[in-house]
Amino acid sequence: MGTAAKARTPPHDSRVERDRRDLERYERELAGYHKQRRECAERWRASCGIAGGKDWPQEDRGRSVHVDIFGNLRGKCAESGCDGWHRDVDAVANAWGNMEALRCSKCGRENTEHEDCGQYPLNEPIKPACSGGARQELDIQGIHKAF
Image (cartoon, rainbow, N blue to C red):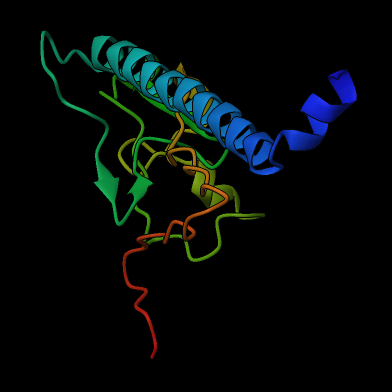
């Protein structure tokens, strides 16, 4: 009877179970993403002297101007009195291999001389597509569908 019961179990159940596990993992990752962003933003606000505010690090076309190329949210600089690390995303054409990408556009000091407020995730986890459904389309600024 045990093998007959297994034979009657539709293969769809394993896909449904896999989809459920994938969705649960996504929800955990999404909650972790929001928690990490919130905690980093709180440290950044404290570092930059933004009291009691709900300000978030400024972004320019999806790129944070307060996050260095290594993904660290940077706060104030104790040496120069700069109120928070800032990069001009248009001033440095190629950030990789270019030491100017590490310098603050306000005070000129390197990223490591500014307070490290933690790894600041910029991209939400991607929601998994269900086996029976269509894939999720990404909404990317500046990109459109070509028909």
